[in-house]
Length: 338
Image (cartoon, rainbow, N blue to C red; front, side, top):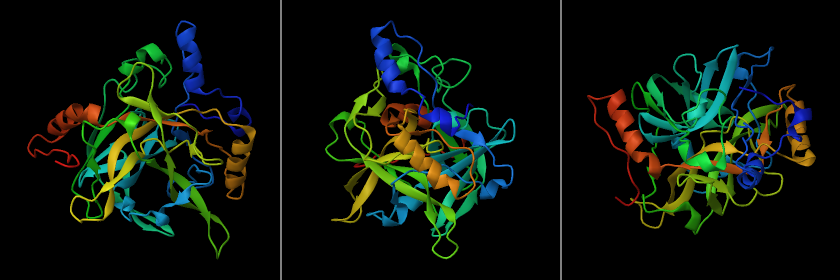
């Protein structure tokens, strides 16, 4: 997996712009820009590794529904070359996590799933993994680098999703329901929310510490020929970026709580899988400055647009995969309103 240093970031052209132009010019090959792995800082052990930052995100402690920490998890995998892939995931059952397929491709052994125990300072509780499976068409059925052969006309071939089965249910899990198959993101009346790694400065030590943010966006469009892959129609708010390592984040929408009248909760719409890596000098500079104080030299690729895989179009595959991974214990995902 390729990693871009800061001087190169502003030169990377947006995939979505390239793909749109490509559709008019014979579907030329789009540039591969979706990467969640980056080298481990040589002076820091993996549990202290600085993760990518979302600029101008909202601290997760301000979540209006107070329930994200039960369904949002961090995921890390060891990759060849002593690299660590950093992603996020969505808890859909007490022992089942969904994430982006490319987060687990090339993984050496089972991924490390981390439930949020505390937000400030951020503390995790690791959950042992029993098995996982990446969708066979995560990369459109092609070998080689992720999305390297992507064109708009073949967007429907890509199903960048994976299922992780834990060894046992987590006591910290508060699984999120999945929107009805009748739900169409294009006609969503409300904003979507997704989640991102960030940093907060410790008021006592004045050092940057890992944190989690949330950001919102609205208006999405299908990507190319796909009926299950959507991209944000508009960019995120000024200075708000999604960065390398945020893949696998749940994309959610606010709904009425099914158990408590008058209370709001979230429903899962999709899994963040893709992003445009083209950012301007201003945004890239903010990312560089945010990481500079921590001594981080590997500046992640960031974006002002995101894309996601629609969950409802993958329910059959998810359920079949769960039966395959654990045939003795039938389980099914909860659909909101059913």
